Each structure stands twice: as structure tokens, then as C-alpha cells.
Length: 224
Image (cartoon, rainbow, N blue to C red; front, side, top):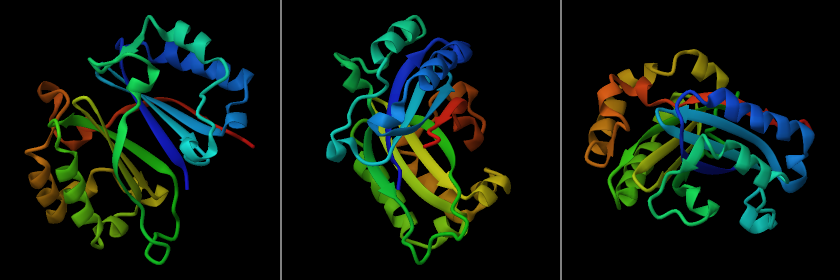
């Protein structure tokens, strides 16, 4: 099991390569894995920066709460491009999204070829709607649909009015096409139930569910 933290900030559109190169340099020249960090993914979505940090275990248990050893240098290098999102921001921890729901299949029903193909879905969430959204997904995930679609995990986060949905699927399911499950009647029912609480981040640019998927521009995985 991988434990994930999700950081959400504003990012200057078009600065993906610059920010990715900064992390690439320090991920190679330092050893994040010595602090329990085993991977990271950087994604962009309109004016958003999404940083998914992967650890071996919950840092609240391990005590390893630091990021890269060169955190301050990284922060200074990306400061012209990455800035806080929440209006209440006072320190870096205020950029960490709150996990309010998670689901993984039990061992007996888990897909046999559980890959780690991760999709990050972004939207806006109505303030205080986390319990309702968690309930809707909980009812759906209690059935057989997620496993039928090759889903190996789901994690929901919120920060201010931003909704982040991490969807992990088998490699085979992802290769079949990310949009095929949108045609399922049950999926349409879930979308209808979510509609009072979840909306597109940028309604003017949204044409369908695929327009809610963030673009991954950098990935690092520990080799040991």
C-alpha cells in the first residue's frame, strides 16, 4: 500500500518544464527515499499545480514528515511559478489537501493484474459537501462496478474549493480507454448524484469527463 499526500497550488500556465526540471535535478542529486518518499508526480490543470507525494507509510506514523532535503532551495526556485492556492494560506502545510474518502478492493475481489496507472481528476467542490460526496462514492464502491472496471483504488481530497480525485486502475483497464466507463448507466447515475456538489473547475473549457483530467508533466520513482 502506498500512502499519498496531495499538494495543490496555483501555477503559471506553461511553466511545466521549468518546474519539472527543478524537481528532476534535486530528485537525482539527493535521496528522497531516505526520508520515506518513494515517488512523486507533478501535474498541471489550467492554473493549478498538483503534487502527489508517495510514501511507504503515513508520515504521522513513521515520523518522516519532511520532503526533499533541499526543500528551501526548491521552494525558492519555483516561487516565480508556483504560489499558494488557499486564501487562508499561512505556511506550506496549508497547501496540503485533506483526504476525505478512500477505497481499495479487498484481497478476494481485487483485480488480478493490479497495475499502478493513476489518473488525477480535478473539479470544484461545494463548501462542506465532503460527507455527501464520500457517501455517494461509498455506496457505489460497495458494489461490483469498480472491480469490473479494473479500479484498484480511489482517494478523494479537497482544499478550499478544489476537488481532487485520484483514480488508480490496472494497466489493462487504462489501456482499454479511460472514457469507456462513462457510458455505463451506473456511472451516469453517480454523476447525477454528484452534480449538486461537484462541478467543472473551468466550465467554459469543459466538454466532458475527459476535460477534468490533469496533465502529468513529471514523475520520479525511487529505485531502491
